[in-house]
Image 1 (cartoon, rainbow, N blue to C red):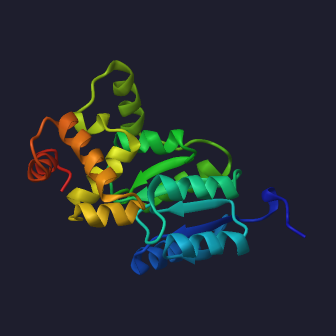
Image 2 (image 1 turned 90 degrees about the vertical axis):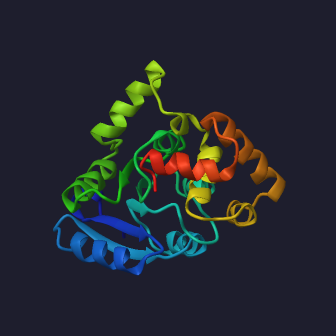
Length: 215
């Protein structure tokens, strides 16, 4: 029989492709009396299988996983486990894409440069049904309402995924494979990214990213 939530620790699953992050978070979370890591996953496919076998309350998720990633992975998780609280834990800074993820069903978003106390606070918040956003993300939401955003913060969710993959060093072919779209579709997304950033080619996207502090 499953114990009532009030009498048992918060069950956490960690999905990240870096073993050191999975193991480090697991050790720190397991030191807390009110939470425990019940499983880990290293890829999108691994996560789907894990969630089918390991009931949990909170998923700490890096969207840059192999096999399935990004919004597609978040949508799949929420489709199969609608009540699961998903805390995005990413190397990407809190920006417009973070808001897209919250709108797509994530319960919270944290950049990996945050301290462990904030990670623990975020896990507790989303476990009790709250949406966890940092002060930076709250300010960004206000800026979005006023229209005061940088060009890259105005990209759509899919455009942002393509943008991030490009600045991570992926080719158009690799971007298409990662997102399971055609190369021509990936090229079309990049064309819209260039238009919104006001640049002429993909090399200038990298220059833009460097100047914006994204590299």
